[in-house]
Length: 145
Length: 219
Image (cartoon, rainbow over all chains, first blue to last red; front, top):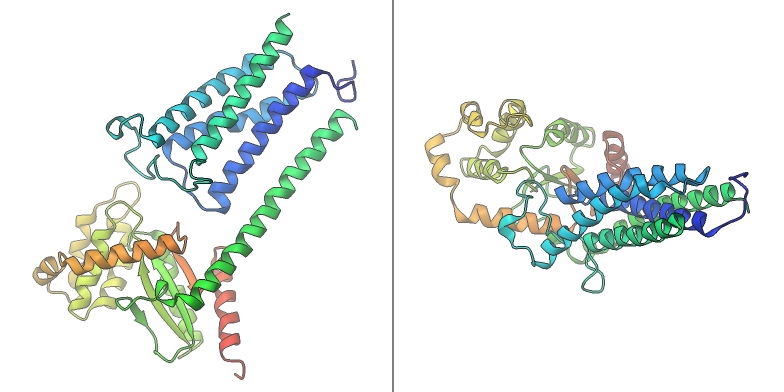
């Protein structure tokens, strides 16, 4: 099968969407730090570590289509998703201040942006990782049949 | 469209949006700050702000600095050169953005030195000896004290003046203004309210020179 020009099947489209979400998030994250000048806090760094390789993993999985990509991508995605989840709990104050790990540098609860009163950068991160978790689980279900 | 072209096109669109976004953001920032410079000049220069150069200078070079910041120390001789190149036309205003942990102590020393009339001498000594007391690998703030006598300071008086609550309030005000003006890194420069958008010696020189030309068109 000529993978670069073959038909758009659902599996390919799912991996493509994963790549799109990862790329938009990676560029968005770089925009916040490099253009707007926000210093990433410790937890943001861990999320970036799990996010940035995904752009390359998904790119490679598109040509030729690697249906087993979730084997490599899902651990990264889950690690990022858990970190983002924990980060949001801190921001919302559900996890108390005393056990937060970021004592030096930028505070993880510093709110750089606050769109519509509740959209923060950690929430955007969590939404992106959640979308990736959903897409990869859908991919796994399709390919394991 | 083939899959390859789809991915390439989307990549190009994403990267292009990133750069367009960067451009739009910088333009927006320049406009907002320009408005603030007209409507709310005190955000840039407060009553307490230390300055160098004549009052009648038409070009105000406002620098948000941190005494423990290496780049600030590296830039300081350069800003003085810029002032010397345009005598009487530039006024340097120093504001504090002590972002390094514990850096507010150094601001307190500076301000207390000002009470002895030794502000600029102390700043000179601090920046020149910075590598000994503010090394990133091993900051040793107490090492600064051995250099301070070079500025001709009465250290006992300095120690008691440092704790003046007025100095703490002044630092708070400067930090609040730095936040309003979105200064996130030091040194942060503004020339007549225009921010230094792309950082570097040449860029600062160009910005200063264009403001000097605008303020003194007939010279």
